[in-house]
Every structure is written in C-alpha cells, then in structure tokens.
Image (cartoon, rainbow, N blue to C red; front, side, top):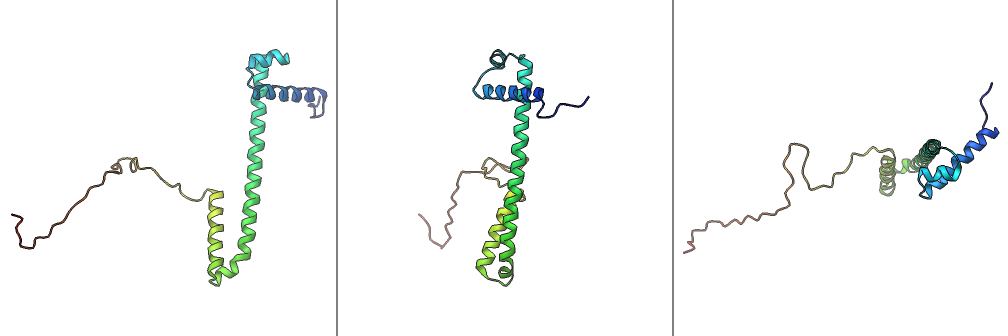
Length: 146
C-alpha cells in the first residue's frame, strides 16, 4: 500500500486541522481550548501545532538563506564592476569596494564580535576602571612654598 499524497483526502484533512490548530494557538488559545474547538485530542493538537511551527521555521530559514545568497550575488556583481577602477587606484572605487567588502563580511558573519562593555576584561584580568585620577606635576624650580 502506498503512502497518501498531499492531495489525498486524509492528508488534506490533516493539513486543515493543523492550520486550524495553528490559528487558534496564535489567537492565544490553550491546547485544552484547541481540543474543544477542533474535536481532536489535546496531545494531537499540540503535536500539530509543534509540527506546523517547525515547518514554518524551516521555511523561514530556507527563505533567509536564499535571500542572503541573492544579496551576496548582487554585491559580487557590483564588486566586479568596481574592481578594475579600484585596482587602478581610483579612490572613489576603492571606497565603494571597501563598503561592499564590509557588507559582505556582515552577511557572512566574518567579522569578530565587537565588545562594548566596560564591565571588565577577559576572565582573570582586572576590570576596566571608570574612575578618573588626576596627577599634578610641580617642577622644582628652587623656590620654597614657605
């Protein structure tokens, strides 16, 4: 016996129940309330919601990867156009190439994270001090203060 296809009536009904469960959950309903509204068990309602959220998450991640690939491709095309002038030393082209490189690094996560904390240094090092100290130097010129 073959597995039901996406258009099989049983599969279609399951997808309909999943959509219904997801909509109710988005509306803030508990799994007990979803059970009452749909006529399915509480555990089945939870399973359908969890599976629907996992499917949505996978779709979003795939879309984000596709978008990132498209954006990097655009940057590469712009870089190819600017590269000859940048190699010749045209400062405007060099500046634009550097901007493109920065953007590409951000997309790909190539830059090291920037630390903006004043709490302290790496483990084992002294904390950063925010107290200012003033040292006054008074040269000795042979005069007595007295």
